[in-house]
Length: 271
Ligand code: ADP
Ligand code: MG
Image 1 (cartoon, rainbow, N blue to C red):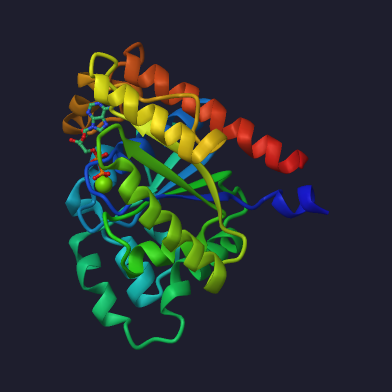
Image 2 (tube, rainbow, N blue to C red; image 1 turned 90 degrees about the vertical axis):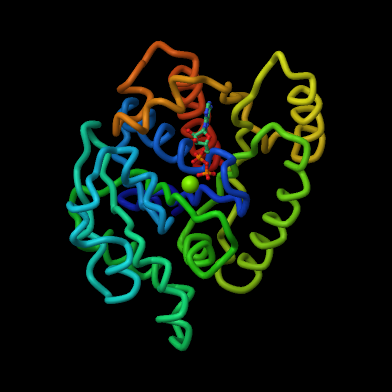
């Protein structure tokens, strides 16, 4: 029975796009926070060596004793890497620059693409009071870290910046997702595409939105994240924008995105 299968297991969503600067980390932080605000229990798993998602929650580099590197390279339990944040119900498994060396370190290992999947499965067994969502902040490339994320996930959420080359990168990402589905993870689906840094005053933004909607159809969330100064200021205060300025347009958009994400999950369960 499908619904039983999902009880107690988190929905694992990889936030991925091999382009840098499109809003992956911002979306992971703020969608995660919005989901927690709605009552979900959320784990943000930082898989980018830059560690911007960890920093964005105010997790000091000196307080990352156990990081996703230790989980992937040294088989430490994921449950040991998890730290709390100022957001009730939201936890982070932080990353450090050590992750940069991971690819070489585990290149020869047979299970190298499945390390994260196995770590999450162990965590689910370890924790009695489990997460309902795990959001994985992926690095800006299609390297072994991203492959681990895709192999461990139920679905992929793709942030797309409203700019001219957006669609070009998207096709490349979709074919990688297809490859992972064919080889490593048959259950992988596209959760959706979220348009970020939308600027209604920019004509090009509007054209890109129309093109992406034509290409991806209803995979594109109705919610677009506007370009908003409060969104870009928040990380320097070590806070998600929802804690920094709940009323701003960026916070409100991420709350709407969270309810769309939950609605899609309900539709999946009902299907
Ligand atoms: P990625 O993780 O894909 O590299 P980031 O989430 O780090 O991208 O975003 C890149 C830059 O754009 C960051 O400086 C971030 O603060 C800024 N940014 C992201 N989303 C918005 C937004 N909606 N409004 C304004 N600035 C944004
Ligand atoms: Mg990032």
